[in-house]
Each structure stands twice: as structure tokens, then as C-alpha cells.
Length: 282
Ligand code: PAF
Image (cartoon, rainbow, N blue to C red; front, side, top):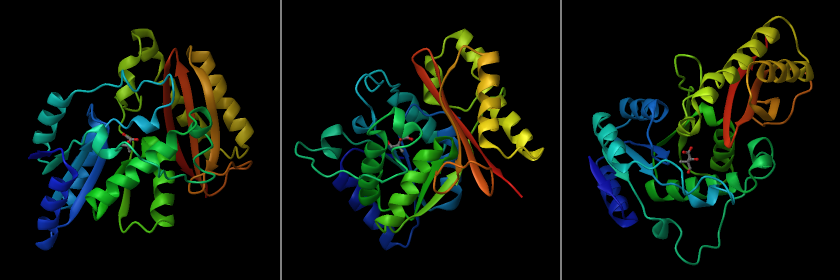
């Protein structure tokens, strides 16, 4: 496994692989690997000749007062885990190489970036789209791997890929969960013992919503209320948002129909957790 820090070294290594008709799979990350990341790497390993994983804690996707400086960083352990997954390349760029002094160009994905998480974290998806756009230009992979846990991030990146004609296939893999249902996330580390015990209520409430939809409840207001009540009854979590939206366009749905994304964000103290499920109404 190679650890490459410079864009030019990465580009020349990948150009040589491309000349030999090797396929390149890419998993962008901010490090602090957990089972969610590893599942993306495993899928990428199975489906590609060369696996590239980037580790870059991207400053432009954190707002003022967010956890950029305290975001978990553990290069040593990440490299150990990456070796076990038999990756080919870790791309570990510096902040200066991704954002040189005079960076003036950013990617704004209209409409879908400003809702849901984007409403509480202004500028977040601009930072995500910009860095993923830059990484796609640098790595030029055949396939990009993302996790469903960040459903809005997936929608924003898919839209950007379509709109800006990036020649890449996007694969979205299911959310990895702890045995009690909590979606695996780097931010779970911030939870106190009590908050950790309460946090599975996010997934429990989504499962109850799914059951209600199967039992013919089609009103998104009622589904939202069911989720809200479940969370406040069983936890100290403060709901940021709960929404039933079209899974592709992220537009709000009054009546649940077709492929619906039920998505939520809940704060436990200073920690904001997100989760979602997709329900297909037939
Ligand atoms: O999901 C993440 O870890 C980040 O948002 C990403 C896609 C690596 C961009 O910084």
C-alpha cells in the first residue's frame, strides 16, 4: 500500500495504472475509519483493480463553531486498518495542496443543498461538493463509493456528477449499524454513556415509521409526529428536523408515495446525529 501526499505523485501513479487498463475505485473519507468506511473499501476492493482512499478533513464543509479542530484524526490506526483491507493507495493531501492560497472557485448545488442538513449547516454541502469535485478531478476514478447514511450528501454529489458531466459511476452502499441499530458514525465517539444508550431511538423511530407506512399511513405530517413523539418519549435528544422527501429530488412530500427518504437529525447535547431510511410505497 502506498501513502501519497502529493497530487502529482498520485496522478502519475494512476496514469500508469490506467495505461494498463486497470479500473480505479475511489472512496473519499475524512479518516477515523469505522465499519462504515471499511464496508465501502471492501466493495471497492471487490469491484476494482486499484483502490484509492483519500483522507482529508475538509475545512470548507465545517461551519464556524463546528467540530473541525476536534474532529477525530488517527492516521496511524487508519493506515493499519487500510493495510488489512488491502488498499492500493491512501491519498493524504495537505490542506495547502487542496486549497492553495488563492482558491476562488466553489461548487454550489442549487435547491437540494440548502434544505434538511443544509438548512442547519449553511455552506456545508458547498464544501462537500467542492472537495469531492476536486478529488474526482485529481483521482479520476471509474467508480466512486459513498454511504447511504449521508443521504443528502449522496444526492448532492450525484446531482453534481450529472450536472458537471464527471465521467464517474456513483455507487451508494447501505448504512452500517451497531448491533442496537445506531448508525455507525465518527461522531458517535462524542456521546456520553447516557446519550449512547438513548441514541438507537433514531433508528427505532424510523423503523416504526416504516411499519406505519406499510400499514397504510401515508400522511407525512403523521409520520413526522410519530417519529417526534418516539424520540422525545425515549430520549433527551432534541430534534433538528424530521422529513419525508422524494428520495431522488429531496423535495418534501405531503403524501408518501414512490421512493421516499425518511430522514432526520437529532442533537444530543453538542453532538448532532443523522439517520435515514428509504421506503418504497407500492
Ligand atoms: O462523508 C465524508 O466523510 C465527507 O463529507 C467527504 C465525502 C469525504 C467529503 O469531505
